[in-house]
Image 1 (cartoon, rainbow, N blue to C red):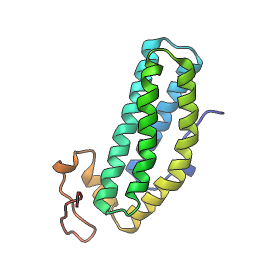
Image 2 (image 1 turned 90 degrees about the vertical axis):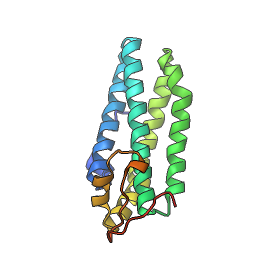
Image 3 (image 1 turned 30 degrees about the horizontal axis):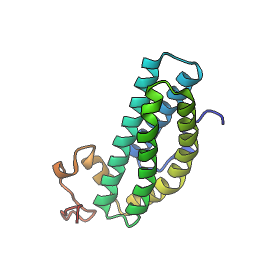
Image 4 (image 1 turned 60 degrees about the horizontal axis):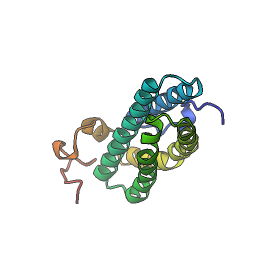
Amino acid sequence: MGSLKWTVSHAVFVPEIDDQHQTIFEALAKLEQALSAARPLPEIRELTDRLAALAVEHFAHEERLMRAARYESLRWHRKQHDAVRKRAERMTPKINLGDVETGHAFIDFLKSWLPNHTRVADRMMGAFLRNHQLSKLTIRVGTKPADACEWVGSRGDKFDPST
């Protein structure tokens, strides 16, 4: 499988989500390069941990946005994120111990999963957010914990996203 680069074909047209996706794609490419070049284990650990942290933060951010927007496909979308979380929890420790084969398997999985996810699930979410004029909410929410945010709908009414 060739290298993976973010292109506009992966765009969901919500700028902050697209920026996060680009960063994840770059982190994935760096880890793939490091594994292929048999870089020292401390470097591979750092790159693996960075990729995992970026994904965890990004998934949490998307899920907050979907809760705030009352996105009806949140559970379905979260299940897709959970599949990656579980695989990362299982594979990251092995990669960090120097298991290059597991590293390549994880990279191959992400190179297949990530473009499919961004082009279908995330694009659907992005369309929903744009159609409900929540891109302003996206900026206001940022990456704060849900309980630290003031949740405001597209009409300016406050609400609790956990309900």
